[in-house]
Image 1 (cartoon, rainbow, N blue to C red):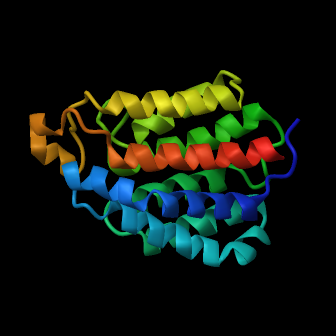
Image 2 (image 1 turned 90 degrees about the vertical axis):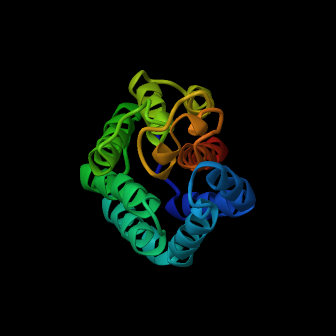
Image 3 (image 1 turned 120 degrees about the horizontal axis):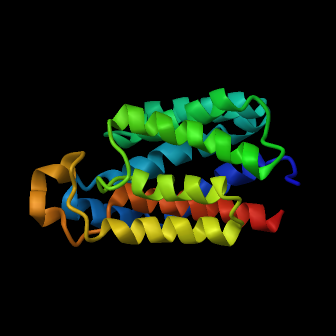
Length: 201
């Protein structure tokens, strides 16, 4: 059903995608945040990519945990702990690479719940969860890669008209309306990067 996940290629694809969109992420974050999301994410994913060989040699769960720990240490702001929590919780939930889509949905759900707990938030607050929650729902419903991509894009688009209630953007109140959330954008980019690699498999 699902082959062995190509961890190294997934890492490299995620790092390359973020690197290619640093300026976009920076511009989004300048509008409603500190303006450092692009560079922070680039630094974190670069560190993970530099350790890709070591990480890929680990069992699936430990690989995700190592990637998450690296993000916590290298990504500044709130994004490091949030993305770190996502990957570490997924690693804890799945010692071995998911052999079926239903199992992948369970592992991803564990990561999403960790992000909710760490950020004390949920979908609708104009955060990365507005992408992660719909993606998790698509996986739980047995959606294919196209459905997962659509869920990520739809979740990202939905952050535009939202008023931020969490994070730095929340201080802007009504002025946060009309801007895409940078964390949701980086999440959507990573989802698409993973989908690209899986489609090639």
